[in-house]
Image (cartoon, rainbow, N blue to C red):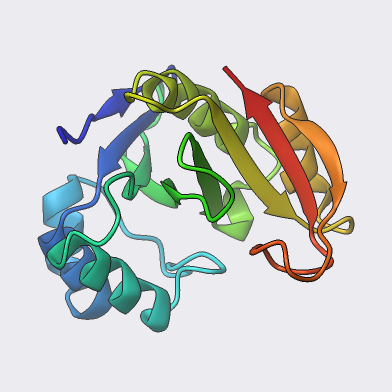
Length: 180
């Protein structure tokens, strides 16, 4: 599968490679070079820890998931002198159905509340729906993560209720669905 680079009004969404992920683990200078971006001192954002990066590398190297793509979000906004790495997000096959992918994202605290996550997800949606066989995107979040809920709702996701035990998704989370 070709890994698309996506440009929005203020963001450059760069698909992760094994080299980018390994650099994120242990060589921030190389990560900055590969992304052509400044890496803020607060990097990484919540949820993109060392264990997650290792899992992403394994998935890519072993080609475990045909729908797995992670994008690094670089702010490339007119009027700003510098490109800044502000977040990441991506997709993976869903445990629910073969025509479904799950989307997840995380953004540095200092960039939250500025519409960047909404813009990034909006940029990802048409690329995701252009993938053969994909008919819906799901996301999970928690009721107290108001910002995440707003990102999903602004992009047309509908709350499908609280996840129960045995559904293959984190119990107690809220499930959101966007259908093609």
